[in-house]
Every structure is written in C-alpha cells, then in structure tokens.
Image (cartoon, rainbow over all chains, first blue to last red):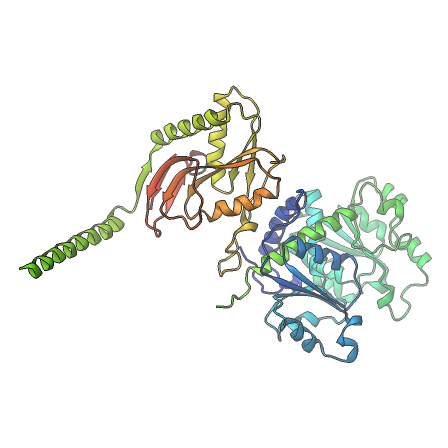
Length: 310
Length: 207
C-alpha cells in the first residue's frame, strides 16, 4: 500500500487510486484521534521539518499535530527567525536542515512551483503545504474527505467553489481532487477574480453565485485574498459581500440544503456571513478536525517509500 | 579397526542425512499442501478452546476479548459466538485491534500494509484481556498488540489464545495460554487458516 508518488507536490500528479488510499488511511487515523491516547508510534524513527516561508496557523498546527501523533520528531522553521533573512538560498536552507538527518520536509512558499524546484534537488520526501497561487494539496484532500464523509461517494455530485478563484491555491487543488473523484465543479465569483483559462480545466463558470448554488450539493466558499491582490479587482468589500457573499437569506431561498465549507481563515461578513459559517449546514470545524487525520495519512504513506540506509 | 568404525558410522550418518534431505525435498515438491486440521477437527478444537476460556473466566464480567485484525477476528468471532452459547447469551465485551501502526518493521524496506479497523468501544482498565489470533509465529505481532492495547488502558492481566502455535520459531519471549494445535514448522513454510465465512471452507493447512 503505497502512493504512486514520492512527494506530495500537487493533486494534479496523484492518481485517483492514491486519493482513495489516502482517504482510507485517514479513516483509520480519524479513529485513532477519538481514543484516550491519540498517538501511535508508527513514525518513531522519522524526523519531519516544517518549513513555512509564509504565515499559517491552521495548516502548520495541523501538520505539527499530525506528525506528533504519528510519533515523529518535529522541527519548525520560520524564515523571520532564520538565515533566510541574511540572504541564504532555498536549496541551501533546506540542505542545511536535511544535513541534520531530517527525513521529510513540509513546505509552504510564496512562489508557485517552489516545491517542484526543491524536489529536483533534494532526496527527502516533500509535502507541499501551499505554493503561491498554485496548489495546496492537503487542503484539497481534506475538503473532499469532509464532503465524502457527509455525502458518501462524490461521483456525480456538483460542487460549487465560490469566491476568489484567481488567487486561490485551494481552488486549484479542490478542482483537481474533486474531478479525479468524479464530481462536477462549478466556479463562481466576480469575473475579475475568475481566470479565463479556468474553463479549459473542464469546470463550469457561473458568475451569479445564487445560480451556482442552486445547481450544487456543496459550496466551498473561499477567502478573498487581499494580500495577493495588487490592483483593485472589485470596488469595495461591502459591494463584494452584497453581490457575492453567501448569507442565510440566499441559502433559504434555494429551497434545498447544501453543505457549506470554508478553508479558513474566514473574513466574516465578506465572503460568508456568520449566520452561515456557524449555521447547521456548515462543516467548517469538521474540515479542521479532518485536516489532522488527512495529514497523518499523507505523512504516514509517504514515509513508506523512504529509501532505507543499509 | 577403530578408525574404520568411525568412518562407517560417519558414512551411515551421511546416508541418513541424504535420505532425510531427499524426503524433505520430495515432501516440498509432491506434498506441498498438508492439512493440519480438517473441518470436524477444527470444530472440536474451537469448542475445547471456548470451554477452556469459560473455565478460567466464568461469566466474563471483568473479561474482555480482543481479536486481532485482519485474520484473527475470523477466529475470535467464532469463539465469541460459542461463548455466547455456553454462558447463555450474557454480554461479552468484544473488540477488534489492528496493529499496523505499532509494527516494528515499518521502515525496514517492506511496503506499508493497509491498516484495518480498530474497534474497542470500552476501556481495558483493570480488565482481564484475552488476545485472540489465528497463528502464533515469531511473536512480533503480539508484542505490537500489547503495545497498542496499553493505549486503551492498563489491563489487569493479558492472556493469549491462538489456534495454531508454531513452536520453536519465537523471536520474542511470548507464549500462548490457550492453544488449539502446536505444530513444528520450518521458517519458510506457511500455515494458513481458512474460514467458512471468508474462503468457503474450514481448514488449517501447512504450505
């Protein structure tokens, strides 16, 4: 039982079989997390470095917990407190950490493709924890895993991804993951935030959020990433909330129940209202809970194809 | 004269050895499948083991039964069903344990194995635990099982029941308390236990 890949760089590279294997393993780890002692000694002999060149609370805590609950040794690394601020290159930084006998690297980087670049130069397994606007594979997996938990098989289900698609690595990973599982994806949001090429990925584009929600079983609402928007793409947050924000009135008018996901952090009152985020159809906190199980599964499975020293 | 005798003895022993070697090779080629227990024998053994358990645990009020995933649970399912008959359907706490994450050979060059479901919906604190597995070989699975078990509490005592005990092949100081059948095997041989529920027939064979 191994994955077809040595690194988890993006969901684009994964086979459907890999995703199923990860989900099955995550089911087991989720059960471990319900026990009084939420820990297994599977990775006692493994050291993992979490290298986050970009800010993160959820993903980093989630990865760290996942690694610790597998019994691995964990080192955390943030660039502000390191030699990166003195001008050290990415490869040098990572090689120095690997020289201390680290077996696996979890990396988040602001530059799209950084983990692919690194994978060509180092031997250790790399897990991409988000690279620029490209992919955030573990988020895509845990979103699909949470949907699968509520809806069963995702084959034939319609899932709307709403909001800032252009700057969202979560959107990309979601699209790849859901399509590989046989679901249909609709993207929705202001035209300025939906890249033109997105239709070539085989997704349906619907600029009217309400119309998109009417067709779907699940809505994954994404955060407006103001920190990545270098020129104004909509007039004001208030306008965005009015036309593209998901609120209780809109959901009530659909005459059907849909699941609501959000990868966090939430801008309450902008892309999603509190009455929806904390409402009965929201599985936002389930996503966070499942995140640990999914990351345990990914770290565990990738540890399996580690090359052993003789 | 004396030297000749030693030579003669030596020759006989050599011949003995060759005959035995040919016998082993012959057996391996022509009798690759040897039945250790057929269906009737297996039934009798299962009944005996269940009665032995009742003998020591009486009404199972502070005893829990834990079957080992993936193959041991087929055996423990049968034992628990028999126990229910013997003690008039009193409640028996019964769980299933998977030890994949506790193995000692995880990153030793083997491919990872698919984990199975662990389902222990009770605490094993101060309980008498009976671990049940189908074949006891090196003892490493049971070592891992005891490790895993401790994550569910601190049992009062742990006993081990096994259908087939492959004697003299232990790598750890672990011995069973209840044994269906003890067999002497070569390390390269395999003992397979087939169950009606899974393979369609009840049989234990030596491959």
